[in-house]
Image 1: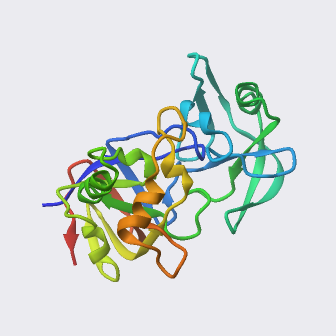
Image 2: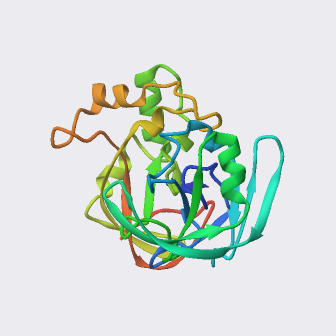
Length: 253
């Protein structure tokens, strides 16, 4: 039996993950997941690959993205209503994202923490910056296999910032679901393909420091897909929206 062990969302891209007991998966994904992101004065995305310490900042928003709260490492909490200002079109890893710069205290607080001039952007569409692949999954068996390769034991799944972590799965069992449909809670997902990984997986999820060569380990035992991609976990496309809760069981359809 393969069941949901952890759910992870990030209201502001690259900030600390939240772990709710349930998520509402709409046709656009989880409404509050990656609803906000940071850019510099030139419009360049500023994420944890650029400033690793961003993962030390907590964040919360409501499904409408109308209120945002951040918690800084020193315990300072900054909360206010979201007031969209000028429109902005951003390029995020090959995706064109339409949003609005947000007036308020958050950019200044994060700029002071990071030593950069930042702007906070709210995406116009709920569900964040992804037009597809709104769900992602991986099993504890895959994390265990990667840990064996690294010699570290089970790897902390938060490194992969995946929406749905699963217990009771075999080594890369999720790969065998590609091309199939699964039921999970009240949802139906079409498992569409593997997830190519980037250097963020080498960062400690609590500090943002690079401390584990996950990519080298994946290359050693999995190799490259199409000569370029290092895969870990799978994407799910939402065929039937619904609620997913901790403990829900995977159903192969």
